[in-house]
Image (cartoon, rainbow, N blue to C red; front, side):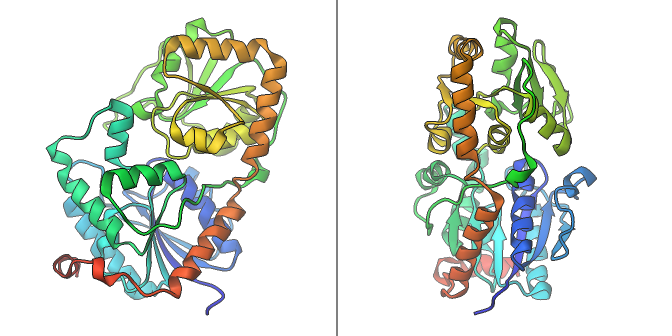
Length: 374
């Protein structure tokens, strides 16, 4: 068997998937593998490219096509599929690693690994306690077919895999592979008196509006890093929290280092990269009581039900009890060090090599659809 692999990987530049892909590419490159990373739906910014310094084995190209959760994406998805098949013919990958679902229906020659970072149906259930309307049925069909077609499916948490099974039925998986970061980049500084949160302020799933509502009742100021502009370009205003806007990674690490307490009231968070980064920086974690956070941070965080009164009470308790705050911070940092990019890269490498020695699951693929992709 080959010692090194050629990996065709997709990513998007909208949210945390880019950070995940950059960390994984660095880890895989350090292990000698060659990666062609295809970015959707536009080119990564210079700031995003800074996450991939000195990676000679990583080639990046962009694909100007909509993501599957965007409005009326299917013409773009079909065009993206043809683009990826062309890339497979020119790059000759050993593995195709897809960070979305529907493209797994493509008739790739190489084995396909799909990573489920989020999905519309599980998002709706968690955030709105509802299911999407009929306009999302094509999405559901494509996602389900992609999951069944994939040679292997994983996710950053078992909670996310459970959600996918509940929504779309059975598919082949060997369990989750938690995300990881370069832990050495994060350090604890002199702590100041403020709460920190990070995420897209407009995103219902992040639930940062709750912090805006309770901020006047908190003993310390609450700072929120992240985009204030929704996908339509409209700015979402905050009333009581101090918004930092989009913060470059190096600057955000400085905020983490100074933050004694990190807040995440998310309603839906399949992993939570910012929580990990804050924990590595010595912050005590106050998190919403959702399955993924329980799975990843049980015993290392304070979990809070989704009411304003509960969040105010929890925040005050941790501020007023320095010993509790120190214990939570130490427990979180100890747990966080297990989520490193080197281990993430090793786990993916193991799955890649296993897939290379396994017959492809061609029986799950539709000949009619495969012909359409061609």
